[in-house]
Length: 254
Length: 214
Image 1: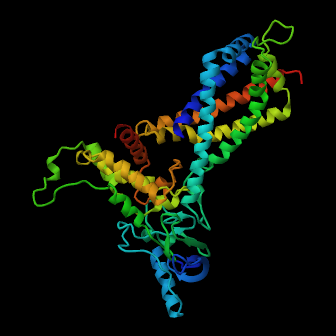
Image 2 (image 1 turned 135 degrees about the horizontal axis):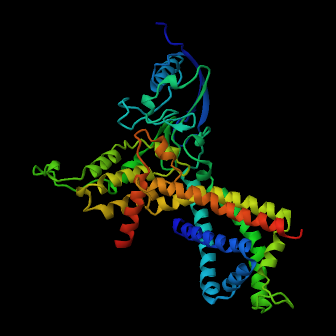
Image 3 (image 1 turned 45 degrees about the vertical axis):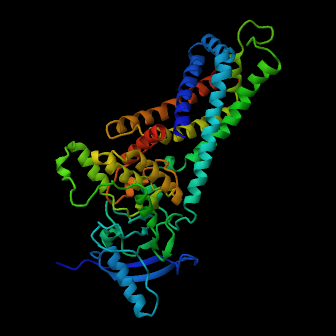
C-alpha cells in the first residue's frame, strides 16, 4: 500500500493580538500535510513551525477533540467547522481539501462573540443565556426522584434527546447572516419543553432566554436555515418553530 | 413581520382573483372594481388596513435589517453562504425593496388617479364622461399598452416570486406553525403560491398588452 499523497497548502489565517487590536489575514504556506491528519493537527503542525521560527503561534480553541465538547470553532473556507457536514472542526480531516488549495481560517464573527485572540472568541454569551432559564429547579439534596419513574412518550423523549445534543459551539450563530442564536436557544428551550420536568418553568424559561439572547446582541432569526445545515450535531430548525410557539403562548398568557 | 406578511399573502390572492376577472369578463371586472372602489367597508376599513400592513411590513423589515447588521459588525473575508442557504432567504431586503419600488409605480398608475377622481374631482360614478359603461377595464387595458410598463411589471412580479419563495414558509415558521409533520406540505404549498400568484399577474399583464390597441 502506497502512502497517501501529502498536501501543500496556503493558509490565510486571521491574526489579532487581542480584543482591542486590529486584526488581519496572514498568509502561511504549509507543505507535506497528511490527508489523514485532522484540521486541528494541521494547525498544530503550523504552530510548531511558528514556534521554531520564534513567532507567536496561532491561538485557537480546542478541548476534547472528539466532537462532543463544543470548544472548537473556526470559520473555514466560508463555513463554520469547514465544508464537511455534521462534524466539528476537530473531526474535520485534511482529506476534505485539495492539494494546492488556499484555506481561509477566520474566527466566528458576531457582536456577541468578541474576538479574544486570533481565532478564539468569547462565547460566554451562551452561558448567560443558559443561566437565564436553561435549567430545571430540582432539589438534589439526596431525595431526588428517579427520572425513569416518570412515564414519557417515546417520541417526546427522542425529540428532547436530539435537542439536548446541542453542544453550544456557536456554529449556528457563525453561519447565520443575522448572527442569530435562535437554533441554540431553541434547542435548550425544546429539551425541557418536551419533558414533564420542564413544564413548571416553561413560560419563564422561554421568555427569559429569548430576552437574554437579544440583550447579548444576537440578531433576529429570518429562517434562512443556514444554522441547521451547518450544525455539527444536526439540530433541526423545528426547534425554532417550537420556541416561537412557546414564546407566543408565554407572551400572551404571562 | 410574519403576521403582516401573512395578511399580504391573502391580499395578493384576492387581488389576483379580481384581476383574473378582467381576462374572463370585462363586465364582471368592471362591476367588481366599482364595488371595491365604492364600498365604504373596503374603502375606509380594508384599504387603510392594507396600507397599514404594507407600511408595518416595510418598517419591520428595515428594523430587522438594521439589527442584523449590528449583530455582525465585522464581516467574513470569505463567506460561502450559498453552501447553506438560498439566495432568496438571504436577500429578502433586496426583493422587498424592489417590490416597494414597484408599489410606487403601481400607486402612481392606479391608486393615485383613483383617489383623485373619487375624492378630489368628486366623481363616484365609476363611468367615463358621456359613456354608459364603467371605466375600470378601459383604464386597465390602456395602462398595459406600454411595453416599458409591461416589462417593469413583469420584472416586479419576478421579485415578488423570489420574495414569496422564502416568505411563505418563513411566516409559518415564525409563528410556530411549522413542524415535522406539516413542514413538507407548507414548503410545497409555498413554492406553488410563489410561482402561481406572480405568474397569474404576469399573464394578465401580457394578456392586456396583446389585446390593447398599442
